[in-house]
Image (cartoon, rainbow, N blue to C red):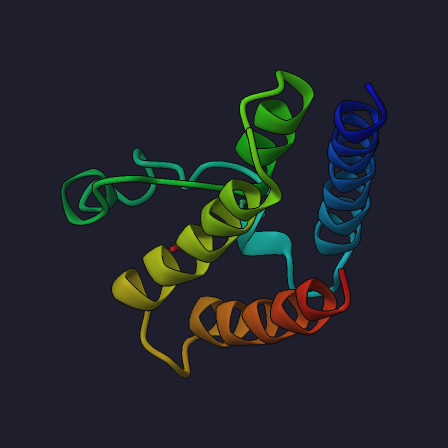
Amino acid sequence: AKKEKTSARRAKQDLASCKNLLSCLECHEHAWPFLLPVNTKQFPQYKKAIKTPMDLSTIKRKLQEGSYKHKGEFASDVRLIFSNCEEFNEDYSPVGRAGHCMRQYFEQQWAQM
Ligand SMILES: Cn1cc(C(=O)NCCN2CCCC2)ccc1=O
């Protein structure tokens, strides 16, 4: 029972770490483009261009619903936000620059988890 307990404990710790890191992303100064799903009424071409939209509120819901089996799945969804952003926005546009900044911040924090 010892081995299973530690893996259950590690899973619990990983979930807490992901929730904490998500909070840090949400309150980051440059998080504003990523807090909610892109408004496809405001950006009609977004739906066609981006096959798998992702945003911080969706990741938050998935964490709360237990949708991530491993913390790596959480990281993949965060990185999807920034890949979508690079696809849809010029590097030096306000949103494009925010995406590069947020990706760098995420990877820095992720490496310490
Ligand atoms: C990720 N992403 C975001 C946008 C965007 O403009 N979000 C603005 C969101 N507004 C800020 C305050 C109210 C709503 C455009 C393209 C894109 O890829």
